[in-house]
Amino acid sequence: MHLDVLDLRNFYYRTALGRVAQRAIRDQVVKHWAPAAGQTVVGFGFAVPLLRPYLADSRRVIGLMPGPQGVMPWPAGVENVSVLCEDTAWPLPTGLVDRLILMHGLETSENPSAVLEEAGRVLGPGGRALVIVPNRSGLWARSDATPFGFGRPYSVAQLEAQLKRHGFTPERSQSVLFAPPASTRFWLRTANFWEAIGRRMPWLVGGVLMVEASKQVYAPTRGGLGAAVRRPLKVLEGVGKGNPEPALNRH
Image: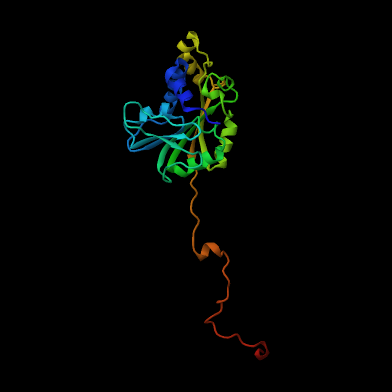
């Protein structure tokens, strides 16, 4: 079940813990994908807190927000780029997207397969998707105080398997949000320290998983009769070689 857009907005933009989470995740997204000119960057779910670095250089930036969640204008003070859509039907042409970010869109959907089908449809050749979900082993998935405490949490193996079933190739994965989901001053002030420690110690469990995946593109098979009939009939063999001599005339 999707969360309400007002609850998501209030968490990321009006709480100290939400701003800490936004900064930690966005820094890693930009590290994966530096803003580049001419690209189409799309977020699905509630990914708009991660899209701001791409507004200046990208050809277009679009924030897709699912109907059960609701939509809000974004970004503030400039032309709106957010769009209301259904999980199963995104208002984008096939192959349009270069970079796609899913956050609070997969784990809360009642039809995650349809979400991934649409993600594969809209990605163009060479397109990449970055899927951000709660880590089932992390503290953030166990706390109702953040949006990552709702929906289905994943392990890396579970998420990668689901991506593969829908035509994606997982390229790399990582964890973020190593500080606990606590709003006390100590944890908020030391959040950057825990993020740095977590990236140096891979055995530590982060609260959120990020998996980058590319779209599988299969080589086309050779068309024509030669591809359909590997062993053609030999009905014309012998034509032009003359009639064979009857065996009775041989001495």
